[in-house]
Image (cartoon, rainbow, N blue to C red; front, side, top):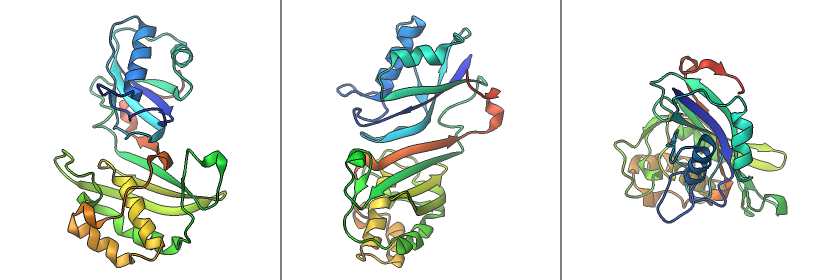
Length: 253
């Protein structure tokens, strides 16, 4: 049987999601704790994507196969095993062909930015003291919407077959004194959101114009875009799937 695990984590202590030989990752910890709970030597999780070091996830999914019914109190028990910075929210029974990565139809990230000193957000948002024109930044963000080649925002030497992404939403808004950039697309390239935010900040500072963002996208040159902003302000906030994948819906277990 195949299951989707729905979980969240603070990425501060981890070198991203994907297991690595010489660094602590979320995948390593979660797979290890689940294997211990279920009484097996190893258990493989296939996630909807991979987050970089220091990036957080409010909602992440990963699929795994298990040949028996899970304990009724599985979510409670696995959370007792996990450290405080990783939390399982739900486990969903899905069709045998369901794939956490390839069946995702949309992904949403948020980037948090503060302009005043706030000790409570020091480790969870990026602080920019310079005045920013968010109206211009939103005008520039509109250039991202639609299907396009976003190689200019991708990490150099990325091993991908295509740099095309369908960006469906990109917008800045203020929420209780914090500026939040929300971006939704079918897929994202490595480092893409942080590079996009860094480029939009250059617009907000007056160093780039709205038309320059379109020129940068057409250039396909990473060196033309802005620097990547710190990972601590980036959150994966949502992943969408067709409802037909879920055998019993997406209720709590």
